[in-house]
Amino acid sequence: MREPEMFEPMVKYLREQEYAILQVNKGKRTGPDIIAERAGRKLVIQMKGDSAAITTDWYTGLGQLLNNMDDKDADYAMAVSESYKRLVEAFPSYVKNKLKLTFFIVNDDGSVKSVD
Image (cartoon, rainbow, N blue to C red; front, side, top):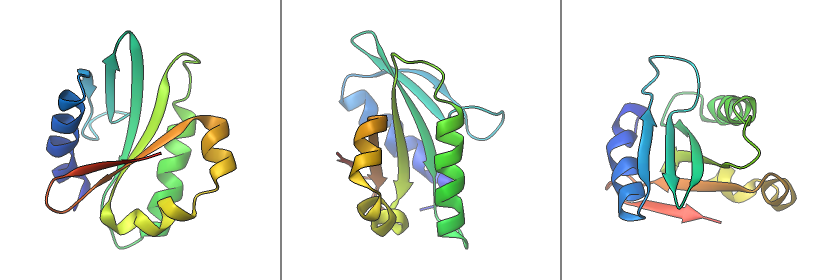
C-alpha cells in the first residue's frame, strides 16, 4: 500500500482506539504525518508506504521520527505498509524499548496491527 492510501485506515484505527486526531500531514509540510491524543497523551506517527526503495525509506522514516522527538511526554510510532514487516520484526528490541517506539503495520486490506 502506498503512503497516501495508508492515512484513511490509520486514522480510522486510531479513532477506534479512542484517539482524537490532532493533525494529519500528507506530505504537505515537514513534521510528523499524524499526531493523535488519548487521555492527555500525544502519539506522534511517521508513515512509510510501498516504494521501490523499502530499506532506504525505512531508515529515512526512522530518521524523520527521531528528528520529531521533541516532546518527552509524547509517545512515538512508525506506521508502515506490509512490505516493511521483516524490517519491523528485525528492529532491535533494545532500541525499540529504549525509545518506547510502537510500530503499526497497515495491511493491504486496510486493517492495522500494532506491533509492540
